[in-house]
Length: 279
Image (cartoon, rainbow, N blue to C red):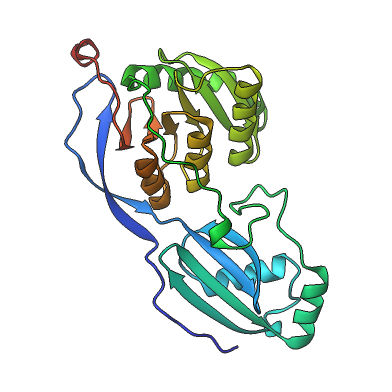
């Protein structure tokens, strides 16, 4: 199968971030390697099919496997060529199908929906990706001690995960670190959407408190947090490069790799009270 092999974007990038251990003075900021996340626009012939948020490596392998598991092809032989075109805003991957297979694809073409993976449902081109507005966020800085308390309490608010060990959680915590609401789901995006919906239905104000998620901090999680109006997003796993970029642009404080003993502040700042440091 003929393939072009242009230089693909790197799969990781160095960012400057500040490690913070709860109860002690902050460390000096240092460079930390994070995974690159970028929109991958998959196009069959001249027809956009989907935008997937992914690491920009092994893209020929990715679209081949994707094409098979989506039922677009029955074997790799039905793919005549793959063109990878890096752009400033993402990567366009154009797949040339065998003529008969392309006609069948046009006949059954559909958008992705109902996935728990990292696609953007119903989005066919990079330009259609929903973006939050860069608003001025006047929320006061969240205290490091509040995040410490929320992390300590989170497990007991996850009954489904205690039962299955297979779901993510998203929590809304007040300025003191009390966990006010939690929603669980097999999909990390779904859990956050559920939580945001619950807070909206309750008429809650997003300006006081912070979001805590049990997943990595990806582009979509940052966008959802910003659209909701939260000023701080805390993630148990690491962020991606695009999540950091968007959080910085949106004025969102992003703390990740959050553990009982500390976290890493990638954008914005946390409040570290002197009495907390001295304890």
